[in-house]
Amino acid sequence: MLTEYVTEQHPITDTFSRPLRNLRVSVTDRCNLRCQYCMPEEEYVWLPREDLLSFEETSRLVELFTELGVDKVRLTGGEPLLRRDLPALVNMLARNPRVKDLAMTTNGVLLAEQAKPLYDAGLHRVTISLDTLRPQRFRALTRRDSLDKVLNGIKAAREAGFEGVKIDAVIMRGVNEDELIDLFEYGKRLGAEVRFIEYMDVGGATKWSMDKVVSRAEMLDLLGRQYGRIEPVTEVSSAPAERFVLPDGTVFGIIASTTAPFCSSCDRSRLTADGMWYLCLYAQEGIDLRTPLRLGASREELKSAIVSRWTTRRDRGAEERLQLGSRGVSVPIEGLKKDPHLEMHTKGG
Image 1 (cartoon, rainbow, N blue to C red):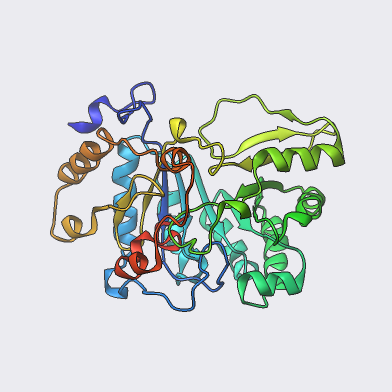
Image 2 (cartoon, rainbow, N blue to C red):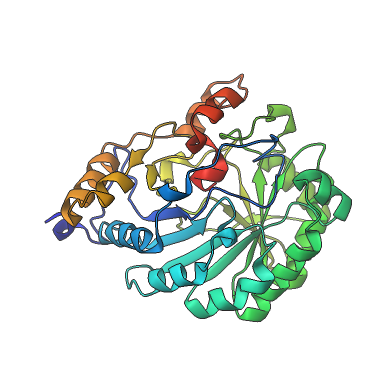
């Protein structure tokens, strides 16, 4: 049996000794915003609805992954709150005793109405994307007039009982780098940990260029000039964010995938809403788990397929992109139209 040798001390590892521990589960490829760094085009090719995994299918696949060592599950999209009756899926996953951390990333537009049902269903944590506090800038960045809804969603998450709320902000030169302090202070007032993210050249970022990237070093310099000495938080973690602490004890994070990739410790993989499994955000080929699942493959057959691919995994997409030196758009528009799975909003960001 495959599960006989899977323990916390002896997890399944890839060719770089990275364990299979963290699964991002996309529940829809659709989104109600059109952010410049993720969905800057006018039209998109959507996954056929009949191909989307049912909640029962999603739960079954997650169960197989957890039997192989996954203990962190994050629901993503697109925008996950667009998936109808999402608390029902949360409840299914929360009943899995192997899931130690059940989280969700959302843009917050629909969170005010759903925060309490999600909390009651068993969701542990929530991360909300918020790149600006200025209404006109929000409209320009997302092509939607929904800033008040996002702010109300963040407030509702706190009121629902969620602790450890995080706010993710993608920082882009010429767009919102002048709001670094404002976003930080907003999170501080709410007791939410802010994580600043470098603009990444992943699939879907068709307007990306290196000169728009505000690096970790620049962010730390700006924050240091405002707040004083910044110290790194010493911790053992495979989380994407490096965490730092200010003199007053406030902790924040920076995800520097573009200029300082963390591929060497990456234990994340991604399951799309239609059951394709990707071993890296930059991967251009995935593994179809939906077809064998629907054809009646046994649990051991499905787990064997997962193990065989993870143990041969060599993905280190962000490091390979960095090594290119001169780099442009990762996947051109033509490639995205041929295979919508290459979009970041389909893979789960």
